[in-house]
Length: 402
Picture 1 (cartoon, rainbow, N blue to C red):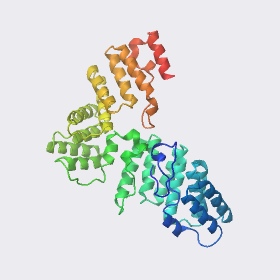
Picture 2 (cartoon, helix red, strand yellow):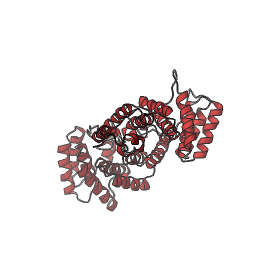
Picture 3 (tube, rainbow, N blue to C red):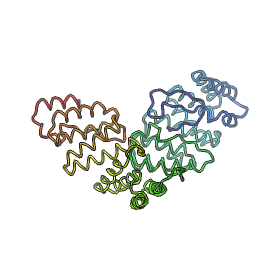
Picture 4 (cartoon, rainbow, N blue to C red):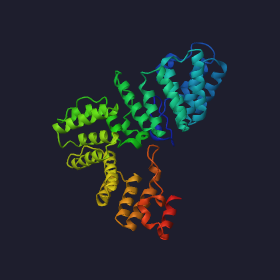
């Protein structure tokens, strides 16, 4: 998640980048500009803001609540009340406060552009903390419709989509967020490749392409790199034939470009050309060799998993096993690679090795994200049908999936 920059408060036990920080007051200077004019509750608000800056959220919340009672038609005390409640990890109360702030602001504008944007963000974040992803998505979409030039709202919508398992929504929203942010004089977004909310997307070719949508020429560009970036932008926008064509042009300029082969594999994967995608991914892995590997480990894992599945389909079980082993070497915490190894071992008739791989897979299933399909039930998987009547095998499976 992306947090407006201000007072840093640790938020333990929250998903992804939600472990990081949360805004409390916008910027203090902006808060001062937007603070209520002389009238009911002003002193209480000022005292509360001072306490928040010092990290005393409990005391600040009490003052903001008093200010809200004294000036019941003013959105600003409710905005700050929600901020204090979020700093205390009381996301349910915070969502109620932010929602009331926005409702009051609709009736009697008081927040101003900046604090209203942050109130929308606060409401979306507080709902996301409660795993109310559908509601959070509605909040962000409504906020973006009224404030389309807000990269932070688009970015956090991408996070919510990722956390709820909406792969296409996550990459599209992230793409739009990065483009909106690039139009600003100074960037405001965190590095999405380091954001835990996108953990399940790290090897995804469309996600990788999305990270390049605003990237311009680089000092160490190789002959095909500009074409790869152009192809990545096309892939991020769903132009699959265009992306594949750019990747092939990049390969004409630089036949040994692992990046271009991975881009081609991604475009063909999205086009449902599984054999072509598998071949391209294998070339990407082959060419990503020391001393100058350029593809990240999650990217290698994705390419190897796709390749392994293709080999299994072709009944090339030994090659499938090698591909899955490449995937688990690249990402030792991804359970699907071990499950693939188990299937390959089963097809090779290696019962004990298959069971050992299954044990690894199920020991790691907590690492699955909302974007990952659940592990299959091996007792119903035809890959292991040869041992369907094996009591020892079935007993071992029962202990895994319970």
